[in-house]
Amino acid sequence: MSENLQNSRRDFLKKGAAAAVGSFFIVPRHVLGKGFIAPSDKLNIAAIGAGGKGQSDIINAYNNGASNVVALCDVDWARAKTAFEKFPNAKKFRDFRVMLDQMKSDIDAVTISTPDHFHAYAAMACMQMGKHVYVQKPLTHNIAEARMLTKAARKYKVVTQMGNQGSSNPLQQIASKWFDDGKIGTVHTVNIWTNRPVWPQGIPVPTDKPALVESMSPADWDVWVGPAQWVDYHPLYHPFKWRGWWNFGTGALGDIGCHTIDSAFRILGLSYPTEVECSVGAVFIKDWTPEYIPEGCPPSSHVEIKFPATKKNKSAVKMIWMDGGIRPMHPDLIPANTPISDDGGANGIILTGTKGIMTIGMYGNNPKIYLNNGEVIDTPKLANDIKLPEYGHQVSWTNACKAGFASKEHKELSSSFDYSGPLTETVLMGNLAIRSYMLRKKNEKGGLDFYGRNKLLWNGEDMKITNFDDANQFVGRTYREGWKVVDV
Image 1 (cartoon, rainbow, N blue to C red):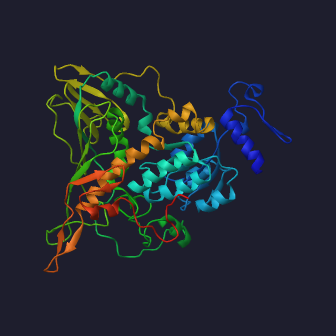
Image 2 (cartoon, one colour):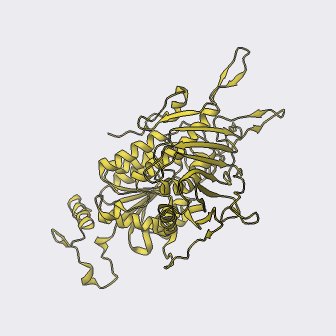
Image 3 (cartoon, rainbow, N blue to C red):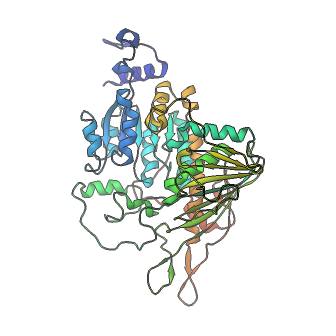
């Protein structure tokens, strides 16, 4: 496709008007018949990461043909097999840089569903080329990257959405309205917990070197490692267990925090926190001595993050996060035999206010209120069934891409980077505390002492811990040569 033709097609997508370029005429939809979308009126989307969650992201964005899937990229074609079969006409790539170079004039928008360490690098490259981006949660691997992508989205005027699909759940709006109407009063404490990790964490770093999977070449593995520090292939990293290693993943907080912390962040109108403190579970490697693996996420953690009062909530808030199966005690307002969340208590959110408590399940589901006077407000039944998968989270993004950066559709997205960037920073603030907690240094006897177990004070505007400088190394990361995430 020529560049002039592509630019005209993009203008059409933004303005919704018929246009002619040379001998090529874009046929208005009304000429073709009701419900028929002209090929030129479709968004051309590509996927970076087409296996695992990437498969459902690109299929949902495709929306039964409402958009064109023109390219699929994955370093492991065995993992991407289902997506390849679903879109046989899409061009297939192993390196997204090659895909963007060869198809730069044919791609309007990109879904990015890779391991966490790759999100920022891929998203920045796409945005700098003017491509709209949908990026899986957490938005980035570290706080500095989240701030960088938030600014870049405004700079390049691209439509953005993070993949925390529960933010598009209409029940979230109902929970927000309950709070805005003063049902539970002013909130002072939020409890959030998860049964994650459901992958290995707190285990020793692997030292053996098994053979690379047959579906990947050494060059593919090099791309998979990308901005992270180099390690040889191991099944404890790929395809799913990377979540438990700081080099690639963000642990239980990164996996679930963008779903559950989102509800409280949105309902209370929270912004940058002011302080964070944590404790983490130890493992026993030998001789029944408690041990911590600084390269890996811990098996469990307890994190407390504090926020100042907001326009929506006139009280400071303490947010308590627990993972690894740890959960809060049963509130007195909830009957003893009633589960404290909708999945039997495995994951959940409790907002405690001056008039009562609100419980919310995963993805914003099943909000419920227990008032101090004994009244219970149950989850309402929605007037209209939700017909689109994942609450239409990907489809609302593709519709906004067609409407353009300045459109009402983009401004109304539930998780554009203007919102999901600060949310991700809060999620990753917990990880900053966890990694600081495990800092050690040699003592006079040659042993190792833990010295990072401080309450950390945070300057959100400057992205800096103000009372323990060693913790600031975890605000960003050291990139492998040739893979640095930068904005130009």
